Length: 443
Image (tube, rainbow, N blue to C red):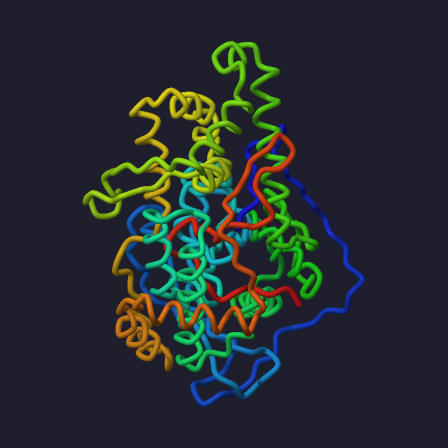
Protein backbone atom coordinates (compact mmCIF):
# COMPACT_ATOMS: atom_id res chain seq x y z
CA UNK A 1 0.00 0.00 0.00
CA UNK A 2 1.07 3.50 -0.57
CA UNK A 3 2.19 5.74 2.23
CA UNK A 4 1.98 8.89 0.09
CA UNK A 5 0.43 10.90 2.86
CA UNK A 6 -0.85 14.31 1.92
CA UNK A 7 -1.81 14.75 5.58
CA UNK A 8 1.78 15.52 6.44
CA UNK A 9 2.63 19.15 6.93
CA UNK A 10 5.24 19.01 4.25
CA UNK A 11 6.01 16.88 1.27
CA UNK A 12 8.56 14.16 1.98
CA UNK A 13 11.20 14.66 -0.65
CA UNK A 14 14.78 13.53 -0.43
CA UNK A 15 17.22 14.29 -3.22
CA UNK A 16 20.58 12.57 -3.28
CA UNK A 17 22.73 14.05 -6.03
CA UNK A 18 26.29 13.42 -7.11
CA UNK A 19 26.24 10.11 -5.29
CA UNK A 20 29.56 8.36 -4.73
CA UNK A 21 29.48 4.66 -3.91
CA UNK A 22 32.30 2.45 -2.64
CA UNK A 23 30.65 -0.74 -3.86
CA UNK A 24 32.42 -2.43 -6.78
CA UNK A 25 30.89 -2.06 -10.20
CA UNK A 26 28.72 -5.02 -11.14
CA UNK A 27 27.31 -5.43 -14.62
CA UNK A 28 24.31 -7.49 -15.62
CA UNK A 29 25.28 -10.90 -16.96
CA UNK A 30 24.67 -11.41 -20.69
CA UNK A 31 23.80 -15.07 -21.06
CA UNK A 32 22.39 -17.22 -23.87
CA UNK A 33 19.01 -18.92 -23.45
CA UNK A 34 16.79 -20.93 -25.76
CA UNK A 35 14.99 -17.72 -26.74
CA UNK A 36 18.16 -15.65 -27.35
CA UNK A 37 20.54 -13.63 -25.25
CA UNK A 38 19.38 -11.93 -22.08
CA UNK A 39 19.07 -9.26 -21.01
CA UNK A 40 17.95 -7.69 -24.29
CA UNK A 41 15.60 -5.00 -25.53
CA UNK A 42 12.96 -5.63 -28.21
CA UNK A 43 11.28 -2.55 -29.77
CA UNK A 44 7.48 -2.80 -29.94
CA UNK A 45 4.44 -0.51 -30.40
CA UNK A 46 3.13 1.23 -27.30
CA UNK A 47 -0.15 -0.19 -25.99
CA UNK A 48 -3.28 1.94 -25.85
CA UNK A 49 -4.56 2.67 -22.38
CA UNK A 50 -7.42 4.92 -21.35
CA UNK A 51 -6.16 7.57 -18.97
CA UNK A 52 -2.56 7.33 -20.17
CA UNK A 53 -2.67 9.92 -22.94
CA UNK A 54 1.03 10.71 -22.68
CA UNK A 55 1.80 7.13 -23.72
CA UNK A 56 0.90 8.07 -27.29
CA UNK A 57 3.96 10.36 -27.37
CA UNK A 58 6.34 7.64 -26.15
CA UNK A 59 8.39 4.98 -27.89
CA UNK A 60 8.11 1.49 -26.43
CA UNK A 61 9.61 -1.96 -26.31
CA UNK A 62 10.14 -4.93 -24.05
CA UNK A 63 13.04 -5.62 -21.73
CA UNK A 64 13.66 -9.38 -21.71
CA UNK A 65 15.22 -10.56 -18.45
CA UNK A 66 15.62 -13.75 -16.47
CA UNK A 67 12.70 -14.51 -14.20
CA UNK A 68 15.23 -15.50 -11.55
CA UNK A 69 18.57 -13.72 -11.99
CA UNK A 70 20.36 -16.48 -10.07
CA UNK A 71 19.35 -19.03 -12.73
CA UNK A 72 21.18 -18.06 -15.92
CA UNK A 73 19.54 -20.76 -18.04
CA UNK A 74 16.08 -20.29 -16.58
CA UNK A 75 12.92 -18.91 -18.12
CA UNK A 76 12.61 -15.30 -19.22
CA UNK A 77 9.99 -12.61 -18.70
CA UNK A 78 9.23 -9.39 -20.61
CA UNK A 79 8.71 -5.94 -19.13
CA UNK A 80 7.15 -3.06 -21.06
CA UNK A 81 9.44 -0.03 -21.27
CA UNK A 82 8.18 3.37 -22.44
CA UNK A 83 10.49 6.28 -23.22
CA UNK A 84 8.85 9.70 -23.01
CA UNK A 85 10.93 12.28 -24.90
CA UNK A 86 12.11 15.43 -23.20
CA UNK A 87 10.54 18.59 -24.60
CA UNK A 88 13.56 20.85 -24.45
CA UNK A 89 15.70 21.29 -27.60
CA UNK A 90 18.74 21.28 -25.31
CA UNK A 91 18.11 17.85 -23.87
CA UNK A 92 20.52 16.26 -21.38
CA UNK A 93 21.92 12.82 -22.15
CA UNK A 94 21.22 11.35 -18.71
CA UNK A 95 17.53 10.34 -18.56
CA UNK A 96 15.19 10.00 -15.59
CA UNK A 97 14.01 6.47 -14.82
CA UNK A 98 10.70 6.43 -12.95
CA UNK A 99 9.99 3.65 -10.44
CA UNK A 100 6.24 3.26 -9.97
CA UNK A 101 4.51 2.60 -6.66
CA UNK A 102 2.17 -0.04 -5.32
CA UNK A 103 3.82 -2.39 -5.56
CA UNK A 104 1.85 -3.26 -8.68
CA UNK A 105 0.52 0.04 -9.99
CA UNK A 106 -0.02 0.39 -13.73
CA UNK A 107 3.13 2.39 -14.45
CA UNK A 108 1.89 4.30 -17.57
CA UNK A 109 -1.20 5.40 -15.63
CA UNK A 110 0.69 6.42 -12.53
CA UNK A 111 3.27 8.46 -14.42
CA UNK A 112 0.79 10.11 -16.80
CA UNK A 113 0.12 13.19 -14.64
CA UNK A 114 3.77 13.40 -13.66
CA UNK A 115 4.77 13.70 -17.31
CA UNK A 116 1.83 15.92 -18.29
CA UNK A 117 2.95 18.39 -15.58
CA UNK A 118 6.05 18.90 -17.76
CA UNK A 119 8.36 19.91 -14.93
CA UNK A 120 11.10 17.66 -16.31
CA UNK A 121 11.66 19.10 -19.78
CA UNK A 122 15.34 18.59 -20.41
CA UNK A 123 15.54 14.79 -20.04
CA UNK A 124 13.87 11.72 -21.46
CA UNK A 125 11.82 9.76 -18.91
CA UNK A 126 11.92 5.95 -18.87
CA UNK A 127 9.01 4.06 -17.33
CA UNK A 128 9.00 0.31 -16.75
CA UNK A 129 6.02 -1.95 -16.06
CA UNK A 130 7.62 -3.88 -13.21
CA UNK A 131 7.59 -7.67 -13.17
CA UNK A 132 4.21 -9.22 -12.52
CA UNK A 133 2.24 -6.03 -13.20
CA UNK A 134 -0.05 -5.09 -16.06
CA UNK A 135 1.82 -4.87 -19.41
CA UNK A 136 4.60 -7.10 -18.14
CA UNK A 137 4.61 -10.71 -19.32
CA UNK A 138 3.41 -12.64 -17.47
CA UNK A 139 0.98 -10.23 -15.81
CA UNK A 140 0.17 -11.86 -12.50
CA UNK A 141 -3.26 -10.34 -12.17
CA UNK A 142 -5.86 -12.33 -10.31
CA UNK A 143 -9.61 -12.43 -10.97
CA UNK A 144 -10.64 -13.94 -7.59
CA UNK A 145 -9.17 -11.01 -5.64
CA UNK A 146 -10.58 -8.47 -8.09
CA UNK A 147 -13.99 -10.10 -7.68
CA UNK A 148 -13.66 -9.98 -3.90
CA UNK A 149 -12.77 -6.28 -4.00
CA UNK A 150 -16.03 -5.59 -5.82
CA UNK A 151 -18.08 -7.85 -3.55
CA UNK A 152 -16.63 -6.11 -0.50
CA UNK A 153 -18.56 -2.98 -1.46
CA UNK A 154 -21.78 -4.71 -0.44
CA UNK A 155 -20.39 -6.52 2.61
CA UNK A 156 -19.61 -5.58 6.18
CA UNK A 157 -16.01 -4.42 6.26
CA UNK A 158 -15.31 -6.44 9.42
CA UNK A 159 -17.13 -9.76 9.76
CA UNK A 160 -16.48 -13.49 9.68
CA UNK A 161 -18.23 -13.69 6.31
CA UNK A 162 -15.92 -11.03 4.90
CA UNK A 163 -12.89 -12.78 6.34
CA UNK A 164 -13.97 -16.12 4.86
CA UNK A 165 -14.50 -14.56 1.43
CA UNK A 166 -11.17 -12.74 1.56
CA UNK A 167 -9.20 -15.83 2.59
CA UNK A 168 -10.94 -18.00 0.00
CA UNK A 169 -10.16 -15.47 -2.74
CA UNK A 170 -6.53 -15.26 -1.61
CA UNK A 171 -6.17 -19.03 -1.62
CA UNK A 172 -7.79 -19.29 -5.06
CA UNK A 173 -5.48 -16.57 -6.34
CA UNK A 174 -2.37 -18.32 -5.07
CA UNK A 175 -3.50 -21.62 -6.54
CA UNK A 176 -4.27 -19.96 -9.88
CA UNK A 177 -0.95 -18.16 -10.15
CA UNK A 178 1.01 -21.25 -9.08
CA UNK A 179 -0.68 -23.17 -11.88
CA UNK A 180 0.78 -20.80 -14.48
CA UNK A 181 4.27 -22.14 -13.78
CA UNK A 182 5.59 -18.75 -12.71
CA UNK A 183 8.25 -18.77 -9.99
CA UNK A 184 6.33 -16.57 -7.55
CA UNK A 185 9.33 -16.34 -5.23
CA UNK A 186 11.13 -14.34 -7.95
CA UNK A 187 8.64 -11.47 -7.88
CA UNK A 188 10.32 -9.36 -5.24
CA UNK A 189 12.14 -6.07 -4.87
CA UNK A 190 15.64 -7.54 -5.21
CA UNK A 191 14.83 -9.16 -8.54
CA UNK A 192 13.01 -6.03 -9.71
CA UNK A 193 16.04 -3.86 -8.91
CA UNK A 194 18.16 -6.23 -10.99
CA UNK A 195 15.72 -5.69 -13.89
CA UNK A 196 16.40 -1.94 -13.81
CA UNK A 197 20.14 -2.57 -13.71
CA UNK A 198 19.71 -4.77 -16.81
CA UNK A 199 17.75 -2.00 -18.53
CA UNK A 200 20.50 0.54 -18.04
CA UNK A 201 22.99 -1.89 -19.51
CA UNK A 202 21.06 -2.95 -22.61
CA UNK A 203 20.14 0.66 -23.48
CA UNK A 204 23.76 1.71 -23.14
CA UNK A 205 23.03 4.43 -20.58
CA UNK A 206 26.19 5.60 -18.82
CA UNK A 207 24.34 7.49 -16.07
CA UNK A 208 20.73 8.09 -15.16
CA UNK A 209 18.61 9.79 -12.51
CA UNK A 210 16.37 7.55 -10.41
CA UNK A 211 12.94 8.84 -9.32
CA UNK A 212 10.95 6.56 -7.00
CA UNK A 213 7.51 7.38 -5.58
CA UNK A 214 5.91 5.55 -2.63
CA UNK A 215 6.81 1.87 -3.07
CA UNK A 216 9.03 3.09 -5.91
CA UNK A 217 11.12 4.89 -3.27
CA UNK A 218 11.62 1.54 -1.51
CA UNK A 219 12.64 -0.04 -4.82
CA UNK A 220 15.00 2.88 -5.48
CA UNK A 221 16.73 2.22 -2.16
CA UNK A 222 17.10 -1.44 -3.14
CA UNK A 223 18.58 -0.34 -6.47
CA UNK A 224 21.08 1.94 -4.70
CA UNK A 225 22.10 -0.90 -2.39
CA UNK A 226 22.48 -3.62 -5.01
CA UNK A 227 23.31 -1.77 -8.24
CA UNK A 228 24.80 1.66 -7.46
CA UNK A 229 26.74 1.89 -10.71
CA UNK A 230 25.46 4.47 -13.20
CA UNK A 231 23.27 6.34 -10.69
CA UNK A 232 23.82 10.10 -10.99
CA UNK A 233 21.05 11.21 -8.60
CA UNK A 234 18.09 9.81 -6.71
CA UNK A 235 14.74 11.35 -5.75
CA UNK A 236 12.74 9.55 -3.05
CA UNK A 237 9.17 10.88 -3.18
CA UNK A 238 6.65 9.97 -0.43
CA UNK A 239 9.30 7.78 1.13
CA UNK A 240 8.66 4.17 2.07
CA UNK A 241 11.47 3.20 4.47
CA UNK A 242 13.19 -0.20 4.32
CA UNK A 243 11.78 -0.92 7.78
CA UNK A 244 8.19 -0.72 6.50
CA UNK A 245 5.74 -3.48 7.41
CA UNK A 246 2.12 -3.80 6.27
CA UNK A 247 0.70 -3.79 9.84
CA UNK A 248 2.64 -0.59 10.42
CA UNK A 249 0.52 1.04 7.74
CA UNK A 250 -2.37 1.30 10.19
CA UNK A 251 -0.20 3.04 12.78
CA UNK A 252 0.74 5.59 10.13
CA UNK A 253 -2.96 5.90 9.29
CA UNK A 254 -3.73 6.83 12.90
CA UNK A 255 -1.04 9.51 12.75
CA UNK A 256 -2.43 10.77 9.46
CA UNK A 257 -5.92 11.11 10.93
CA UNK A 258 -4.49 13.05 13.86
CA UNK A 259 -2.66 15.36 11.45
CA UNK A 260 -5.92 16.10 9.64
CA UNK A 261 -7.90 16.75 12.82
CA UNK A 262 -5.17 18.93 14.35
CA UNK A 263 -4.62 20.87 11.12
CA UNK A 264 -8.33 21.62 10.86
CA UNK A 265 -8.48 22.70 14.50
CA UNK A 266 -5.51 25.04 13.96
CA UNK A 267 -6.98 26.61 10.82
CA UNK A 268 -9.42 29.45 11.51
CA UNK A 269 -11.67 28.78 8.52
CA UNK A 270 -11.72 24.99 8.86
CA UNK A 271 -12.27 25.09 12.62
CA UNK A 272 -15.14 27.55 12.21
CA UNK A 273 -16.84 25.29 9.66
CA UNK A 274 -16.01 21.99 11.41
CA UNK A 275 -15.37 22.76 15.10
CA UNK A 276 -15.62 19.16 16.34
CA UNK A 277 -14.22 17.17 13.41
CA UNK A 278 -12.44 14.47 15.39
CA UNK A 279 -15.35 13.90 17.75
CA UNK A 280 -17.77 13.81 14.80
CA UNK A 281 -15.68 11.24 12.95
CA UNK A 282 -15.28 9.09 16.06
CA UNK A 283 -19.03 9.16 16.69
CA UNK A 284 -19.78 8.32 13.05
CA UNK A 285 -17.46 5.29 13.01
CA UNK A 286 -19.07 3.80 16.11
CA UNK A 287 -22.60 4.63 14.98
CA UNK A 288 -22.16 3.17 11.50
CA UNK A 289 -20.51 0.06 12.87
CA UNK A 290 -23.60 -0.53 15.00
CA UNK A 291 -26.07 0.59 12.31
CA UNK A 292 -24.55 0.43 8.80
CA UNK A 293 -25.85 2.71 6.09
CA UNK A 294 -26.72 1.04 2.78
CA UNK A 295 -26.94 3.09 -0.39
CA UNK A 296 -26.89 2.61 -4.15
CA UNK A 297 -24.69 4.57 -6.53
CA UNK A 298 -23.79 4.45 -10.18
CA UNK A 299 -20.69 2.33 -10.72
CA UNK A 300 -18.06 4.54 -12.40
CA UNK A 301 -16.75 1.51 -14.32
CA UNK A 302 -20.02 0.15 -15.68
CA UNK A 303 -22.63 2.87 -15.22
CA UNK A 304 -24.86 0.33 -13.48
CA UNK A 305 -26.23 0.66 -9.96
CA UNK A 306 -24.12 -0.95 -7.27
CA UNK A 307 -24.93 -1.44 -3.59
CA UNK A 308 -22.47 0.05 -1.13
CA UNK A 309 -22.51 -0.60 2.61
CA UNK A 310 -20.99 2.15 4.73
CA UNK A 311 -20.14 0.85 8.18
CA UNK A 312 -17.46 1.94 10.65
CA UNK A 313 -14.66 -0.01 9.01
CA UNK A 314 -15.59 1.24 5.56
CA UNK A 315 -15.56 4.84 6.79
CA UNK A 316 -12.09 4.42 8.31
CA UNK A 317 -10.88 2.93 5.03
CA UNK A 318 -12.49 5.75 3.06
CA UNK A 319 -10.67 8.44 5.07
CA UNK A 320 -7.39 6.54 4.69
CA UNK A 321 -7.82 6.59 0.92
CA UNK A 322 -8.33 10.34 0.87
CA UNK A 323 -4.62 10.70 1.65
CA UNK A 324 -3.71 9.92 -1.95
CA UNK A 325 -4.97 13.19 -3.45
CA UNK A 326 -4.86 16.66 -1.94
CA UNK A 327 -8.27 17.75 -3.37
CA UNK A 328 -9.91 14.71 -1.77
CA UNK A 329 -8.24 15.44 1.54
CA UNK A 330 -9.34 19.08 1.48
CA UNK A 331 -12.92 17.96 0.92
CA UNK A 332 -12.84 15.34 3.70
CA UNK A 333 -13.96 17.57 6.62
CA UNK A 334 -17.03 18.71 4.67
CA UNK A 335 -17.80 15.10 3.68
CA UNK A 336 -17.55 13.96 7.29
CA UNK A 337 -19.86 16.67 8.63
CA UNK A 338 -22.21 16.12 5.68
CA UNK A 339 -22.42 12.41 6.43
CA UNK A 340 -23.10 13.17 10.09
CA UNK A 341 -25.94 15.46 8.98
CA UNK A 342 -27.31 12.80 6.64
CA UNK A 343 -26.79 14.89 3.49
CA UNK A 344 -27.27 12.91 0.32
CA UNK A 345 -24.39 14.59 -1.50
CA UNK A 346 -21.87 13.46 1.12
CA UNK A 347 -23.29 9.95 1.28
CA UNK A 348 -23.12 9.65 -2.49
CA UNK A 349 -19.59 11.08 -2.70
CA UNK A 350 -18.22 8.67 -0.10
CA UNK A 351 -19.99 5.67 -1.63
CA UNK A 352 -18.84 6.60 -5.15
CA UNK A 353 -15.28 7.00 -3.93
CA UNK A 354 -15.36 3.45 -2.61
CA UNK A 355 -17.00 2.06 -5.74
CA UNK A 356 -14.47 3.83 -7.93
CA UNK A 357 -11.55 2.10 -6.20
CA UNK A 358 -12.80 -1.41 -6.95
CA UNK A 359 -11.41 -3.13 -10.06
CA UNK A 360 -13.82 -3.11 -13.02
CA UNK A 361 -15.62 -6.42 -13.57
CA UNK A 362 -14.38 -8.92 -16.13
CA UNK A 363 -10.81 -7.66 -16.29
CA UNK A 364 -8.64 -10.28 -17.99
CA UNK A 365 -4.89 -10.60 -18.13
CA UNK A 366 -3.57 -8.35 -20.92
CA UNK A 367 -2.36 -10.06 -24.08
CA UNK A 368 1.20 -11.26 -23.72
CA UNK A 369 2.08 -12.29 -27.25
CA UNK A 370 5.44 -14.00 -27.41
CA UNK A 371 5.57 -14.95 -23.76
CA UNK A 372 5.65 -18.72 -23.14
CA UNK A 373 3.39 -18.22 -20.12
CA UNK A 374 0.92 -15.80 -21.69
CA UNK A 375 -1.70 -18.25 -22.92
CA UNK A 376 -1.59 -20.23 -19.69
CA UNK A 377 -2.10 -17.13 -17.55
CA UNK A 378 -4.95 -15.79 -19.67
CA UNK A 379 -6.69 -19.13 -19.94
CA UNK A 380 -6.43 -19.78 -16.23
CA UNK A 381 -7.76 -16.34 -15.33
CA UNK A 382 -10.78 -16.57 -17.61
CA UNK A 383 -11.64 -20.18 -16.83
CA UNK A 384 -11.64 -19.72 -13.07
CA UNK A 385 -13.94 -16.75 -12.80
CA UNK A 386 -16.76 -19.01 -11.61
CA UNK A 387 -17.99 -18.14 -8.15
CA UNK A 388 -17.12 -20.10 -5.05
CA UNK A 389 -20.14 -21.62 -3.31
CA UNK A 390 -20.72 -20.79 0.37
CA UNK A 391 -19.97 -24.42 1.27
CA UNK A 392 -16.67 -24.33 -0.62
CA UNK A 393 -15.78 -21.02 0.98
CA UNK A 394 -16.49 -22.35 4.47
CA UNK A 395 -14.42 -25.49 3.83
CA UNK A 396 -11.48 -23.46 2.48
CA UNK A 397 -11.78 -20.99 5.35
CA UNK A 398 -11.56 -23.77 7.94
CA UNK A 399 -8.53 -25.26 6.15
CA UNK A 400 -6.74 -21.91 6.04
CA UNK A 401 -7.52 -21.23 9.69
CA UNK A 402 -6.00 -24.58 10.69
CA UNK A 403 -2.97 -24.08 8.44
CA UNK A 404 -2.18 -20.51 9.43
CA UNK A 405 -3.82 -20.46 12.87
CA UNK A 406 -6.19 -17.66 11.90
CA UNK A 407 -8.33 -16.44 14.77
CA UNK A 408 -11.76 -15.23 13.73
CA UNK A 409 -13.73 -12.71 15.68
CA UNK A 410 -17.20 -11.31 15.10
CA UNK A 411 -16.28 -8.08 16.81
CA UNK A 412 -16.11 -5.01 14.64
CA UNK A 413 -13.95 -1.95 15.15
CA UNK A 414 -14.39 0.51 17.96
CA UNK A 415 -12.81 3.88 17.38
CA UNK A 416 -11.59 5.91 20.32
CA UNK A 417 -9.51 9.05 20.47
CA UNK A 418 -6.38 6.95 20.97
CA UNK A 419 -6.91 4.14 18.44
CA UNK A 420 -8.10 4.26 14.86
CA UNK A 421 -9.46 0.73 14.86
CA UNK A 422 -9.59 -2.31 17.05
CA UNK A 423 -6.71 -4.75 16.90
CA UNK A 424 -7.83 -6.35 13.64
CA UNK A 425 -6.92 -4.86 10.31
CA UNK A 426 -9.48 -4.91 7.50
CA UNK A 427 -8.78 -6.64 4.20
CA UNK A 428 -6.27 -4.59 2.24
CA UNK A 429 -7.93 -2.36 -0.36
CA UNK A 430 -6.38 -2.24 -3.78
CA UNK A 431 -6.31 1.20 -5.33
CA UNK A 432 -6.97 0.01 -8.87
CA UNK A 433 -7.17 -3.06 -11.04
CA UNK A 434 -3.46 -2.94 -11.65
CA UNK A 435 -2.38 -4.25 -8.30
CA UNK A 436 -0.74 -7.63 -8.59
CA UNK A 437 -1.31 -10.08 -5.71
CA UNK A 438 2.21 -11.42 -6.15
CA UNK A 439 3.86 -9.94 -3.07
CA UNK A 440 7.09 -8.03 -3.57
CA UNK A 441 9.04 -9.52 -0.74
CA UNK A 442 12.03 -7.74 0.73
CA UNK A 443 15.29 -9.66 0.48
